[in-house]
Amino acid sequence: MSAGRVYVLVARLSAEGVELFNRYEDAALPRLAAHGGALQRRLRSADARTEVHLVWFPDEASFEAYRADPERAAAQPWLVESGAACELLQLEDVVPSPHRA
Image 1 (cartoon, one colour):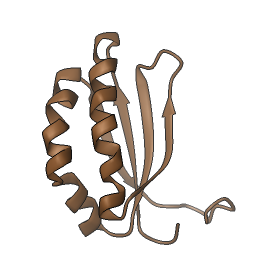
Image 2 (cartoon, one colour):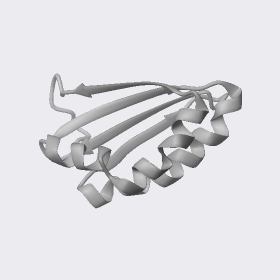
Image 3 (cartoon, one colour):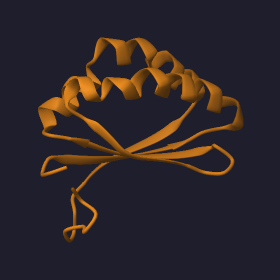
């Protein structure tokens, strides 16, 4: 991936919210590609109660289009019902990564 925007999502879940969060993710993550985005990493704790996503978009407009996507919005109630505490950060490389394509 070349320049663009990198976002990190950290989601913290209760044990009861994991299933609904996964249902939301199953609906929302495939919509990334429709807006030029890419899921670079998806990490989950052993107890499945913390999940971290590293997501790339070519620009802010693409990211905003993803956020406004109607199919993603239709799944949003599952995210809310899951009780996930989500933190979204826009980050930049500090030094070039040798693993960056």
